[in-house]
Amino acid sequence: MVGGTERGHAMSNTITTVRGAKPRWLRRIALVLGGTFVAFIVVLQGVALALPRSNPPVRAEPAWDSPQTRELFMRACGDCHSNQTNWRWYTFVAPAAFLAYRDVTQGREKCNISEWGTRGEQKCDESAETIQKGTMPPWFYLPLHPEARLSPQEKQQLIQGLLATFGGDEEGPSGQERPGVKNDTDEKEEHKEQNKGKEGLIPSTIAFRLS
Ligand code: HEC
Image (cartoon, rainbow, N blue to C red; front, side):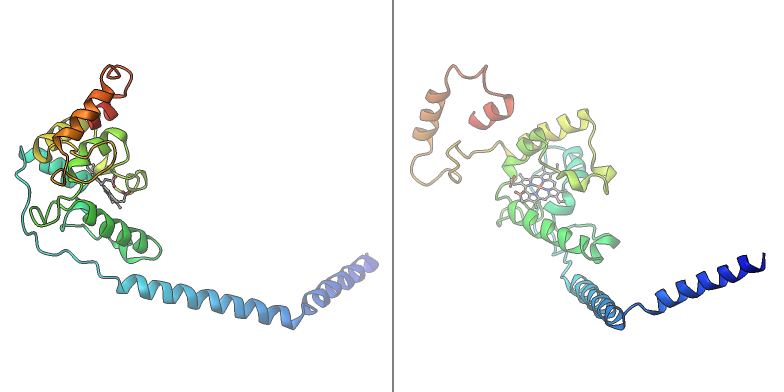
């Protein structure tokens, strides 16, 4: 029994020695790396807090076809496509802050219903299409915003409402910007010619684009 205790002592001594022998330089490196990491996080968070989370005044809105269309749009799209963004708490925390900031800035650039008639409408006419395709609202937005998840009926309602409010996409399949440059009718007719007879083969979203 006595021998056993002694052996136990010997063992714990060995362990202590091994622990104590952890080289000092290793600790220093760990400390420097850890310190750098913490400093990095602090700076990152500082920048995140300094981002301008602005909600400029609402200048003008489109002539909504119905209050429901606006309501659905604000629910599913308004955070990124209006000047009435709900800057939630996590938009103050890095790295979510950077993603949210980028989304709102780029989203407003493409389509901002709060600056209608100035330059807000840029690409709003593609809205119905993006919902149909499922690209808008972006997938990563939904888990954090369950209220933006639309039922199939609500989706249809919003699509119809947006078509009535914004009109369809007037861009040709060649991707050229809005009518008014040279062609307009000529070129559209041409595309119609090209796509004659393909109607049944083209998925409805694309057919919608072509029409
Ligand atoms: C989380 C922010 C966010 C939400 C919510 C959101 N969008 Fe977007 N949207 C963006 C960003 C960012 C872009 C530009 C970058 C891109 O094209 O992917 C964009 C682009 C667009 C465009 C321009 C066409 C295009 O694909 O570039 C349309 C139209 C659009 N969104 C419609 C909608 C509609 C309709 C909804 C609601 C059903 C919606 N968006 C919800 C962020 C958002």
